Image (cartoon, rainbow, N blue to C red; front, side, top):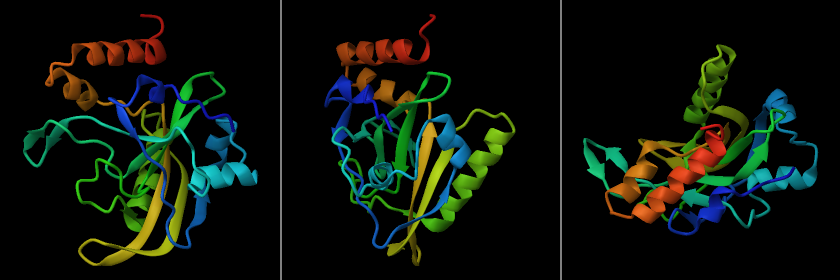
Length: 203
């Protein structure tokens, strides 16, 4: 698997170095083989399997910082509170696709959260995203689902899980808001140029 790291090249004002923290006794219980073929990912490779699960550290993995609205108000800094961008891979269409692990553990943007996800919500997202993709609705895709024996506490203890997601990009409107409202025009321009280069090369 050839991981690329274009977003990390933007620097530490756009993200923080973060690694996946594997769950206790986690297992890969569902894997999207057709999507993996499109991305040239060989899950039979022990090295690839360890890298995707977080057992091996991806030195350029990161969590993104952004702003946004939450609980009825604008927050000038949010970020990936439980997500880690492992890197990017090229699909058979030669476009870049992010590999993003949800439920990967605490990040610098967790704000006292545990950074985890529960099995029921990961199953729901896996099924919903693949159903939408089958209907030709643009969406993130699910590549792998991990369960575990680790308890995650919400209203009650639940089984912890991680969901490996694929999308052409995880940049959202809040990324632009983060720099705009701080008056950081240089970084805002960098982000715009990055998006034009990677997502709108013909503009």
